[in-house]
Length: 144
Image (cartoon, rainbow, N blue to C red; front, side, top):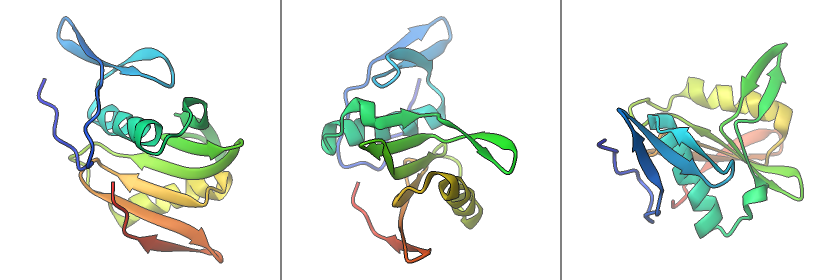
């Protein structure tokens, strides 16, 4: 399987296995093998980034948490917490998916429920970061 090189400074030591014609990646947080989709490839980079580079405890990383928004159940990709408080909401897209204003608005709606201080949108190649300050999102450049 040809996996795209993503736009992170670091490289990570993922465990990947093949079963017949499918590939799986080991998820450190859920302690299980997951189907290696393009979106999962991006999400696992963020898990490793926060765990290995930002030295976050695995228990502070919440993956695919359900949340109810306007009566509809949604699922977030990654939430970084600190003492159970939402700190960073990460929305992952497959590398071939463009990050648009619509994607940002979707993530901001999710965050209206969660109240994280920061959101990151990423397709692995492009990353957009914003902090919620004084009732507005302020974009900033981050180095990942």
